[in-house]
Image (cartoon, rainbow over the protein chains, first blue to last red):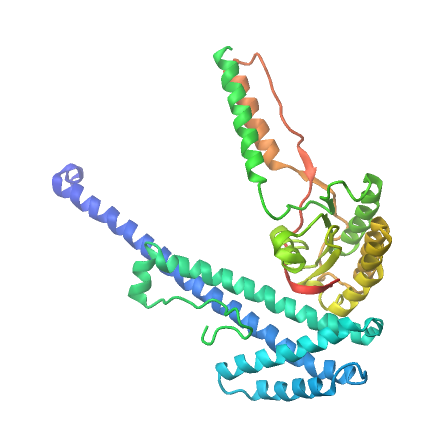
Length: 189
Length: 229
């Protein structure tokens, strides 16, 4: 090809189109990949939140078995927790799980209040250990929730700002819900 | 003032300002291993060194990193979130192994938290860590002997790690060091050195900064495991 072609009008226009195409393709790929990656990140993080909820549910039978030997803990509270745990495991929808989790948390709160009101219980190694495990599980849930909200924030920000908003609309990326402040989490992450 | 000297002064001030601005954070940046950020200081230098030696030994034997942080208050975050975010931001424990522990003591609030990295949760479960904290750190709040409490907590945690933690096969041990090269200071120093030499045509030389600094942690992660009191 004659080198003078590139300095001619048509040559310059074609070169401009080529450069614009390269830039457009790069921006498109980068933006789409960014959205897809952030979406995968927050969804994986939600799985971590659910893991920690499952961990809490798994802890309950041992907790109930150990503390039921101490008359300071109300037997009605322990029965409630056991019954609600079964309901949680059998829950067919996320909405039911959310409601049951709230009820479980209320009863666990009563257990913890009893534990704190009786210093004698704090000197019982097994009881103290299980209360530590319960508190540790709650903290893990809080940490994973915090990270989930961070990931959702990052994803949602890219969706509403340019050029992410253009590609989000084109490829069907939708805003993700934040973790609900009411214990139990979002209905549909 | 001669123009060249003025330019040199501007460069030095600008570079120092950049360093200062970079340190304006809400959460503390920790260095190996003991960080007493209280006013007035809770520990004497010799006491801090004693605890540092334990952490260094544990790191040398097992590669696990124990960080000790003493603050006046955890502010609005609360001790749980403060510990979790400080742990994450500083990456306590080796990358991949996540074998870090943060012992956090908040003097004014009379609260403590021992935050355990993912890789150590199996041997330092919440119950064990809670028991350690209650027998050492809670006692420290009652007696006022913070050095004794923190030293014993570090010893107990360190002993558990040394007794029960195995780094992955092939992991090099025995390389822990308190100090590392401060590449930022070295770079800044070289830039200023060259600038001064060029501007004065080789008549003046200038060096800034200490090229060594306390090392940072290895990049490990935690999931919120641990206990507090």
